[in-house]
Every structure is written in structure tokens, then in C-alpha cells.
Length: 395
Image (cartoon, rainbow, N blue to C red; front, side, top):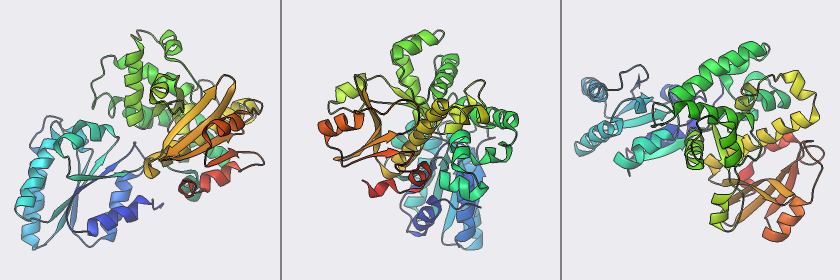
């Protein structure tokens, strides 16, 4: 069983004196529940785990009833501390107000009940944490599985990771691609959209949200203007709606629209978005007619998958290491990815076979003087080495 890096961090936080609620947030099937179960086994604190996924959304007493169980068990056993864990808590109406009420009651009574909340996306944050629980929580983000983790757990090579992405639950089915696609659609894509997006955020046009998701996945790694998107979608409304839907999908760690790097912030916001999935499995499953053999044997096509996989890796690390990811293009010159943290700027070109080498890196370097500029792929930094490396050392 893979032990993700967040496990030790969470254990350390639970061992500290009670101060804040620990919130483990991340997309579906990245191991949040498994992580918490590992923590429960390794700590000496008594604990209880409750899943709100099957609870009626209007059952306002469910949280207080579970909390009462923990208090009673704590009193009966004579424990001086207890760990209470709620999974998918954001499915319940007014959950944050209930959590705040019970947490503050324990604080007032000096009752040492420590709390972990699990959520499927950053929508959890937006819909309660920053409003009702401000100052009472600490976030522990969990991203998609890395190449190293998929390699260690399933023996995948770099090509399998680029094509099939980083959903561990799907690894069993990659030798039967039709079955893999059904699993991805039924167990990953459908719940992510129907439960994590449509049930936690008001969406005026659900059908349009589905279309935006499909389009964004299919064009991962491509620049696509909002006008072109409007022309490709039915009942699309206006560009503001598309921007809003892309932001929601980005908060859910599904797809996002990268902005162009520019010193002027207004130019960033007005830029054509570069669509980018958070997990390359979404690009694959949403590309009709694609197969592993077909993609792998066509250099230009495979190059698109490689570039998208590099973008996935950068987005995943961005949340953990707190840097921003952009692209850059000026006329015919371009840089695939630009990452920034503070005053540090790093330019990354992906040698993917999609186009001939251009002078974009040199032009960008003369304009912005990045701390590092390098090419991923080929005889430069091998793709596997890049995925295994530590980006923070560059920052």
C-alpha cells in the first residue's frame, strides 16, 4: 500500500495540542479515505470515522448526533482526547454551521476532541470553510497520484502513466481499454460532475457544464479562445458563463484554463486560455476513438499527450508548493509552461514532436530573465527524470 506524503504531515498535526480542524481536500479517488485509515492505525488516540455520503442532505441533526456519540464514548472510556473524522461532510446542508457550533462548544468546555474533515474538492472550502469556520481550520491538500506513486504501486512505465493518467482505482483495467474507459466514465467522471460539482454549486445550465468539461478535456494542452468555445457549444450563453464554469471545474481539480504569463495582470486575465486537465486520464477518456496503440505510434499525437502530462504534473505540484502555472505566447514565439513563486520565474519547454523547435525560450529569456529555462524530453531532461524530480529545488 502506497503511503502518501500527507500521511506523516497529518499524524504530526493530530499529535499537536488541539488548535484547528484539519481539512483534507482533494479530487475523488486520490486516497483521502485510505490516508485517514492509515493515520487511525498509527496513532494511539481513540477515533471514530463517519461517512456522510449516504446521509440525506437535509438531515441537520446527523452531525450533532455523531458528535454526541463521540462525547459519550469519550466520557465512558475516560479518554482525555478523541479523534472525530467526517468524510464527504459538505453533502449536508449547513454543515459548516453545525461543525462550528460543536467545535466551539468543545472549545468552551475544554473538551479535547480533535477533528478531521474530508472533502472531494476545493468547492468544500468555498461553500463553508472560509465563511463559518474562518480561523478554525487548516488545509491539507491532496493531489492526483504522481508517476512515482503509480510506478511503485502498479509497475507502470512512463508511457502508461502519460496515457492512462494517475487514478489508482483504474490501474486494474488498463489491459482492457474498453473496460478502463467504462470505469473512468462511471466511477470517476460521472460522480465528479454530478456530485462534486452540480450538487455543491448552483449551475444554471448543467448541460452546458457537461459540454465545457468534455471540450476542456478533449483540448487539453491547446489554446482555445472563448469565442471558439462559444461556437462549439450549444446554448453557451456568453464568455462570462464559460469563465465561471472553468473556474468551478478548476476548483474541483478536473480542468482549468491556464492564463498567459504577463507582468501586467490585466493582460493575464484577458488572455486566451490554454486548456489543461489535472489528470491525463481525463484527456484520454474524453477523446473519442483514441487507443493506447494509436496514440503511442503517432509522434505528433503522442506529443500532445506528453505536453498535457507535464501540465498535469505542474498543476499538481503547484497546489502543494504554492506556485502559479502559466503559458507564454507572443506572435509565433511560445513557451509551453511558465511557473512563478514570488520573484522566481522558470520557463519550461516540452520537446514533444508536436512542432519544430522555435526561439520562444530565447525571446522569453531576453524579456523576463527567468531563474531557470530548460527543455523536458528527448536528450534534454528525460520525461521520467522530470516527473521524479523535486521542482521546489528550482524555486
